Length: 453
Image 1 (tube, rainbow, N blue to C red):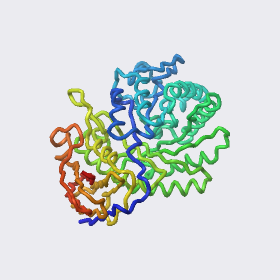
Image 2: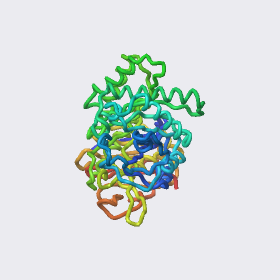
Image 3: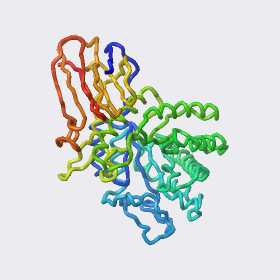
Image 4: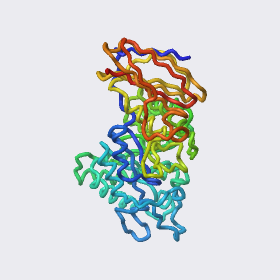
């Protein structure tokens, strides 16, 4: 049984609010009001990743633009030359792109806008690179005017996968250069208060295919174009091993030093602990594992995890979605959503945690004048009893509030239907030391708040 001790007086650095980095999707977008709901539950996102799909805003056959396209409506059924991409998992909606983007823009500090599609058409010569650059510039200019807090442009998504174009690293870098050209001109001519930055590559499973990441960095280092831009690095990982991120971090730092590239923020802007499934029990499993990785990322000040995903199709991605819509129209959190809420309830500064936790488990402690928060998560695959001692608490009467998330508690998918994170235990505390204990089932987590009465 892990014996964990926390000293409420041993304040470390400010906690970096890992829950403020999130994702949206266009394959199954929520109603626009959802953006405010996320901001209320998690705190206003510092950087939210959103999307524009180029084949929906621009038709390569007619050279026409629809800057307020209806999301998810496929217009190429009769066109054998247009690549299929991931249209098979895209659900048509009655939501329009401008309302979608504006809702998240108004409820986030900054946006990262991913531009994708036409990767395959440019590789096959159906769309020239010059035309691609022209289109990208017009599209970015329009949506930057619509949402001035767009900070970053991310060039395409997981492009070596067939569903996202199936192109090689050489062609990807050609697209990257064209986006850099477009953004350089826009920054020069528009005089944005918040200038645009560019980054990539959003490569998935990067520690399984490190050669893809190495190739991108080598292309960057060899690029003598004065318009070359790199303002952030982005990768993805879906893995049962959160320690892979630390390995990637060390590898990346070594390579950028070797290649003379700038040391910039790393956005792991899709992350998951399970496979992509519609299995209801996978939500809890994913939540527990993602918490391990996000707690560990607190030790890496320039690495930010954006868990996949705030809202997605439960039939295909129940494992990842943080919210689902009930039959009565209410949008309610899954265990994944409760995990983000548990992070949002953390205090201002990180506290020292002493004691060894087993692999795939983690404890986070934070504190400020309002009290102490302790979060323990178990993604080990077997039950885990935890004993946590918290010393040097402030004098006076306090209350200890526990929130447990497991198969039965705070899990509308496998337990009683609940629409928010509910208290599982609450008890008074008079002394300046607290003993916290729980038996965390395989894939479960618990939050304790110790606060003045």
